[in-house]
Length: 294
Length: 246
Image 1: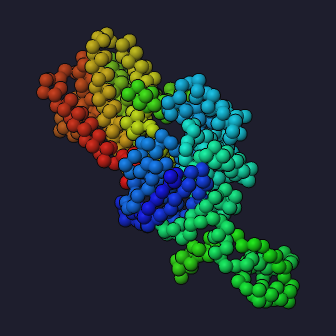
Image 2: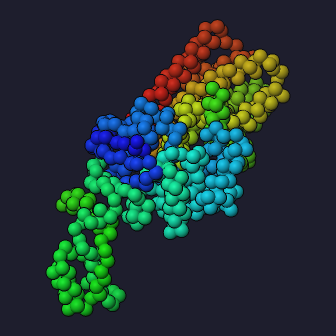
Image 3: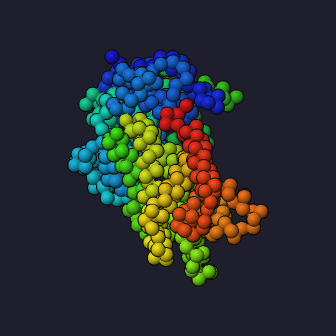
């Protein structure tokens, strides 16, 4: 049985905006599934439907075997959600947030205390436990929100841009937390704008564009699907050169040789890199950006 | 049931915790409903007018915080996003609404206690009078809670979520005859004043404390108006507030 199953899922908001259309996919148990897409592509809408926070207007979806519309209670007992742009209450401490959420989730005071300590240790928050969150960095505040979501042991976790605004160390601590969850068999669905994050974490990913599935599969297959053998970066040797920087994705050996010859003539530096997920992403959704621009 | 009450109380605690952690601010906020009493005392030298103002403070202590539930609803949904986290958990919408209501009650307790103590010091009052006046205050609080929930659930604008309860508290609390007697208004204005549910609540509470005398008809009309207003606001709040977004 899949942890998440969606079939022809669609969402049109009451105002008439169509946010999702015919979205179908499966996520296996213990898998990290990454949703990529531009702002407003429909990632958050999809995540909110699966987290039972938003009603779909078409299709079906189930989480852990339970229907999101007919059996939301069964799902809610088994999931944890980190909403996009959630913020802690500035006048309360990290401890206040996580401890009170443990109590709200029905734990005794003793259990809530030990669970709070455990979560704070895991997320590197213990040394900041009594500081009001107004005095914490953005990364630590985000970890407080994640800590609130993880008060119970979930079977599936929905993370909507969990590492947005975090410094590299903060992001890595979130990644480590996600790896710990998957090691314990937890299914993770996350949205992100960071391609490196998707490459590092995702077992599989799905690119959504204008509410439709533009790609679903592994990051490696997405990169191979670009057809490009490599990425060629051509840039000026001297800083401030007006010729600027070009990132090219040649499809044939002849094209590569042509780029190298031209760059040598112009005295510019050439760097070769394998195609990235970002290249694949831009190729997949770039067409729609150009359509909008024209 | 016990589990639901427990989660509601902890939600209420969480919502009011920033103020409980800073009692000076809590006390200062409480003074909001007591300030007109001070001015009435200074300008009238005490007596019946000040006692009527104290009854107004008792009635409005709860009503003001009820109205300000709009901010809790808005900020928990759109700013902190705690509501989204709770929706995706086994917490029930009733517990959540009850929890936010409890939070407003906690915040109003200091001013309510101060106003009651001052009134008891100013004139002899029966326990039954206090009880009846509290029932009136609670009824008004519930109607204002529904109003607050309707505003908080309807607005998508942070400025309005902040300003609307303040504007309404001015028009429902300070303009109508709540802190001062209805009889102070010219007779042709009095029917307009009775459009405000706060006027009815104040009149009833003043009656129960023996400060004004109301006929049976006035009492029935007062209670009917307040209950009808509560029902209307409850309807609007239920229509506008969604646990699972449509």
